[in-house]
Image (cartoon, rainbow, N blue to C red; front, side, top):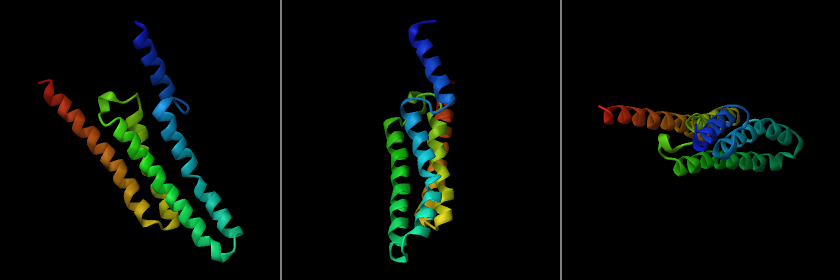
Length: 137
């Protein structure tokens, strides 16, 4: 076993467990911070005056859009499945998890974009796997 394969095995194990490293870590932190924050937003909306509730909601909605754009940015950096770090495709597809907070807030752009994003990642993965199998024949 050479040094490169040992590093790759270490990266794969780190990506599979915990927060991982590199882009895996960034995507998982985006998900872990962005999704549960909806409950904090509900708490803030209860505490602030009625005149500020819409602003609090708009800030969180902008955050959801920012999170989804972050997922798109990481995808643009690693467009091909074969060039991605281990488990990054799975982490990219987890961007669909922003559907639930969007649903809770009635934020229809997030309710459309989050599942569409997960579907997009899955389709690109399936196309690459199919293309790779056809190239080897």
